[in-house]
Image 1 (cartoon, rainbow, N blue to C red):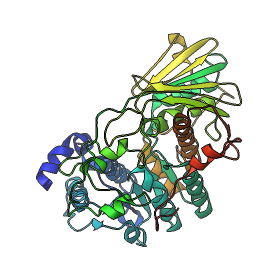
Image 2 (image 1 turned 90 degrees about the vertical axis):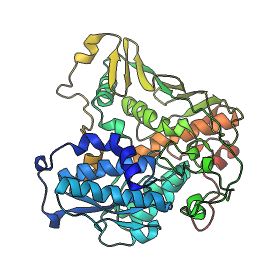
Image 3 (image 1 turned 180 degrees about the vertical axis):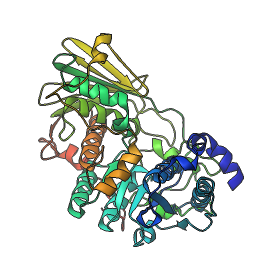
Image 4 (image 1 turned 45 degrees about the horizontal axis):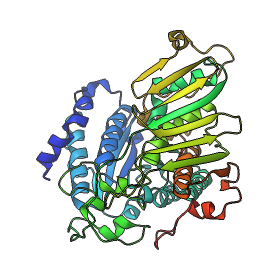
Length: 434
């Protein structure tokens, strides 16, 4: 894919911010500019990179490095970033963004303040821990990590090194989700009894037939901590487009929609229940795993969790994706771009003196950049991201084992179930041990 073709493909996501005149930004002095590297610049990575570039123009941050194991993608990202800066600043931006093949080389740079990590899920923990150990602040796409054990290790590393980590759970920066959670937390539907969350369903079939590794891809590094497997395009990502990659539907790399979309919706469920720093005490789930060739994550599923406060969380496949808070006097349903309630009067409420108000963030990326400057907690900090993802991974474990599991949210262990506890992590291929 040449740069011209790529720009056409990127036009939809780039067009809206690109038409904002550069003169509207009150830009800090260049000497006060924060510098960021982007690790993983594929489909979602380039979208997040553009968001970082445009929000950075507002608050004094700049992308100065990109990294990917696919040379085509890192060249595309390098070219795109320099093109945007040239258009927005009216200055030649050539050679202002350096491309790296190895994330360790990028992390070793002293002139990088923070990183954007948008790799496959199984890489999140290893790169995230390495980044904070290198003194970098991090914006990390959800789900936080592939396994629960990895998540706790990342939380520990962030806290030990006093770094800012924002999880890409951008629904926390949506007015509708904020409103729903404040309504639920303040009893506007009466005593909260049940939370329901709906997620989309994975579809399609993957071709498992081995193919030659393309020369532009460092496939061994792409596999990272996972077990070696023969290359096929459906295992990694399309080589001539930026369409949805196949790894999202292959279990050693991703657990499917339960973590892909579930980490978004369970984050909101926990936020509205006031349990976003803990978790449920039991979980049971059933999932369908039909033969789809290389693709082997769940399709349809149904799960139920119970919290110590008695609230039930019901998770299942369904449309539209969203969260419903049900109390003994009404309900609220929220999805991306909309909120509704059993009684329209519920939505007219505004928090008053002494009532619960939650973190307000108008833009998730901008909130991260402001947190890096102020050293205050971002809207979606690492512990919150870990706890939200934990529910999703627990659900997957319950699907695979087919039985009800008791969970200790303080110890982060299943109670009296050695087989379930063995699934809290997985064997990491060396040298990528977290």
